Length: 234
Image (cartoon, rainbow, N blue to C red):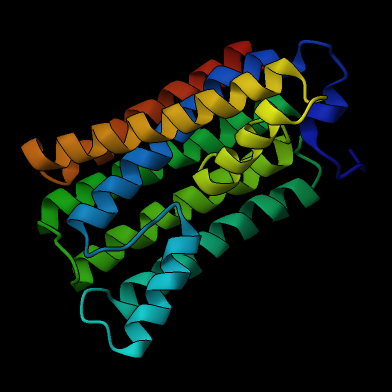
């Protein structure tokens, strides 16, 4: 395909968005889950919310002792590499919704599983070289997710990691007429999904350590890949 526009827009089917919504909500849960694991268990670093990492870098460079320059920098760079990888795949023409979602979520599942295995083998706790390696894998996976999701451009679910813009859009959609009701519902579900992911990730970290939320993320990403393969529009 020569056209590099949003994959869903090219699908052409009226119900093109519907089949993707559960997958994107599942990915939003994953975002909250892995960010909880990284922030609480790997040294106060985000792997999905890059706005937080950019702020943390500023805090750390200013001398704040509670954040890690290395951890935030590694996360940012790895995330951007993930976005670049998806961008290159899209530039190569592999942008139909079903294979795009199926493939990037399968890669995510493998990266999350690798991160969980590495964290278990090294007993990674941040900040440490072992934790930084786990952070790199997680941020790479999240960059791949965000790059793929942005290409899909499903109204109300254009982002699966950042809640500020989602809440802003939700507030506007509630008080400014004209936004489709379906998009407003997706915005609300997206915020809830991110919250539930963070809640679940934090609970698992508190009761089972950092590996448990990463294993859950791998399972959910694998589920998203299977769901995309059988349900998303081609």
